[in-house]
Image 1: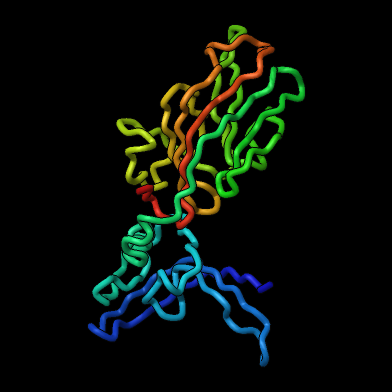
Image 2 (image 1 turned 135 degrees about the horizontal axis):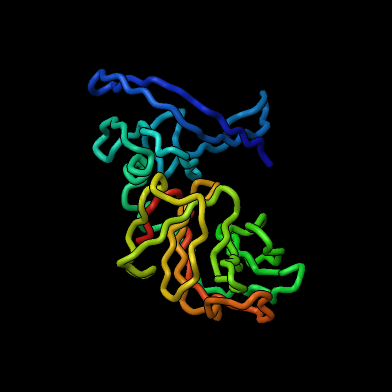
Length: 250
């Protein structure tokens, strides 16, 4: 086991090739292990602090910038550049990051009958795990679940509910199979609840700094729903989760 250390940094570097000054700031992570003589660095994540090159072989992961902060990186020609974080990740990893890291699958999540306490299945993308929890409000364990929202007049509708910190954006014009890249998280929604309908494609930005997409294949939420709704509802969906911090899914 090691000691995990997360740091906020602010740095200024000089390119040995051009003499140009570069400054950036961000968050990164180290793992230290106890060795003879004291603690020693065991692994580092991107952004790298000790050296900038050969990221795909040195870094053990990516610590996502919550605000897409411009970050210093060395490109494939050995030039030092400063680009928005998402682009810096792509430059650092090159084609490898486009071809790796995507978890995908198909799942069915259930929403229990409207009898207190209503139990739902949420889904945690990073673990590809279904979790049973109450669904009177947003999930606290999984990243999302499907619940009911009252609309008045004795009716309700089926909606997606997200864990605190999850941002979402409806995507149109593409399917989960054809999508190459999702938009930057700065355009995502943190309020409201997207409704459940077939082929609804939703991009997610998760609290751990990773992107995902989910697409509803079929469902039994026949809106408007009665109140109370005494029927257990189901949503069949497909998902993709990008483990390496980029916005690319191909």
